[in-house]
Image (cartoon, rainbow, N blue to C red; front, side):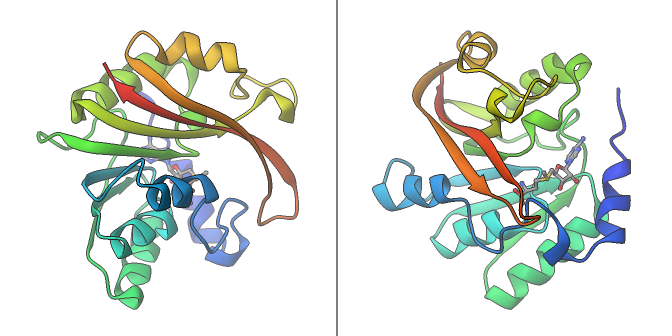
Length: 196
Ligand SMILES: C[S@@+](CC[C@H](N)C(=O)[O-])C[C@H]1O[C@@H](n2cnc3c(N)ncnc32)[C@H](O)[C@@H]1O
């Protein structure tokens, strides 16, 4: 099983403002899901919670949120963010290949997590996701699109369908363009799924 320990080094070396993915605001698609009522306040797990922007937003909207990240430094940043916002989020340091939860969640958030799962760990990751998500539970995936160029973790619509369709009903898939915090434009797929 891979360790993914290099991530903590990234957070130790950079301030929150310097992280390419840290937009300082929740992801647009997530906000749309909440504001449209497609996902209502529920027991939520944010996989790869990072510096906490998205889980803190969800908590401010009434979701009961747990965030998990491999980086202790990121967990510290996220806890500070939740304190400052005056919301309760449980942040847990841990590996997505061995989720330390026995309970099930209604909603899983995966913003920039799955596309960092190495190919050899994908099956294990998916089995952990399926273990902790209730039947009928929702899963929001935001991952790199092939439009960023050819790479092992840049996905086409067809690849996403092939990986997730056996386990999920795909409710919506939207391609998006985002000017990220490092000034580079990146392309993503935003996918809302329901566990079969
Ligand atoms: C691109 S960042 C996205 C962070 C956050 N979702 C956001 O959008 O701000 C990827 C995150 O995955 C975390 N991560 C990488 N490997 C992990 C693992 N094996 N288990 C849990 N978290 C991991 C990193 O520490 C990092 O915070």
